[in-house]
Amino acid sequence: MAELQTNPIQLYYWPTPNGWKISIMLEECGLPYEVVPVNIAKGDQFKPEFLAISPNNKIPAIIDPQGPDGAPISVFESGAILQYLGRKTGLFYPADERGRVEVDQWLFWQMAGLGPMAGQTHHFRIYAPEKLAYAIDRYTNETHRLYGVMNRRLADRDYLAGDYSIADMACIGWAKLWERQGQNVEEFPNLKAWLARMLARPAVKRGLSVNAEDKGKIDLATDKDAQKILFGQRAR
Ligand SMILES: N[C@@H](CCC(=O)N[C@@H](CS)C(=O)NCC(=O)O)C(=O)O
Image 1: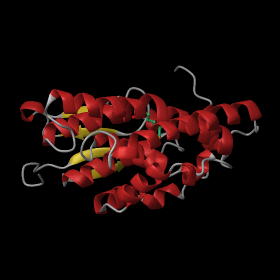
Image 2 (image 1 turned 180 degrees about the horizontal axis):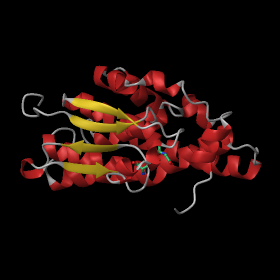
Image 3 (image 1 turned 90 degrees about the horizontal axis):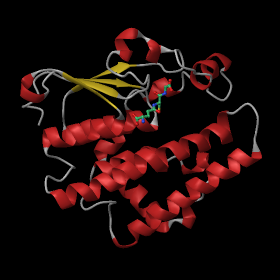
Image 4 (image 1 turned 45 degrees about the vertical axis):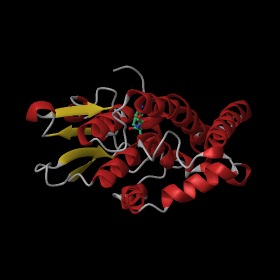
């Protein structure tokens, strides 16, 4: 794939579960890319040049200088980026309709379920200045339910949808943080085995380690300025 992509893809990124989806996919596909760090704790996501490609002020986003018909294209929303890269490369995203629908269901399940719910679980368990029992229970229980869904799905298969796909890639970064979500992976043996399978993949290891050192630059649980930037947002 690298030989077809002569100009690197620009990956607007910070090392978080949503950012990892794309660093993992780019590593799996062997596509050349350059990381553009977007420090979301410092407000880089509100810079006009970033908003021009990611109007929702969130990472990840990409610019592919070799987009459709060879013209540049930018893409935001991690699920849309995964689908775009899957279509572009023909990798990890089946071309046949049945296979594609299978992957789409589990990709959207992650995008609308596991990601947002586990994100709220992190928020109320770790970052919220007040420990609100109702919110903690609500999101911890919902994350538990979602882990159960995934565990059942994986009872008779190695991957969420057909072969290893973008649906699995979307879930890895979230599921690996099960402890922070107040979960016990021992309750979900099929998910545990899947996670071990995913984390053993060299490209997943590389994807998860992209700019890992940046992670340590923010402690969202204590950094009041970062909390204000990330948790107090209103329409601009
Ligand atoms: N639905 C979006 C969610 C992305 C998202 O939540 N990104 C977070 C980091 S994991 C972010 O950039 N937050 C910055 C902000 O909210 O200002 C996607 O999947 O791309």
